[in-house]
Image 1 (spheres, helix red, strand yellow):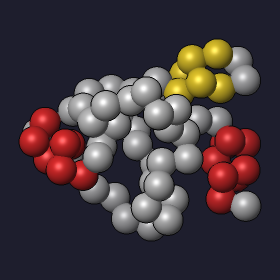
Image 2: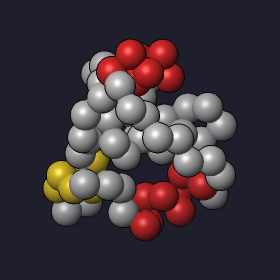
Image 3: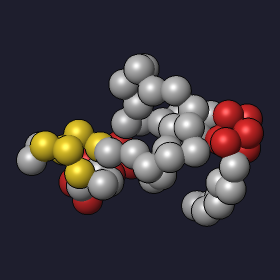
Length: 65
């Protein structure tokens, strides 16, 4: 596990950062829909209960299994 602080829009573009939080697994964003653009911004996630500030624990366990 690695924690990366993104401090500028140029860095977000270079890293392919889709907003905070961005969770990468094996170099890929398992929660990306394909419509996102790199951005130095906040991100919302679609959960079973609607939009939220991050994926649920269950969603994280699923992508890590």
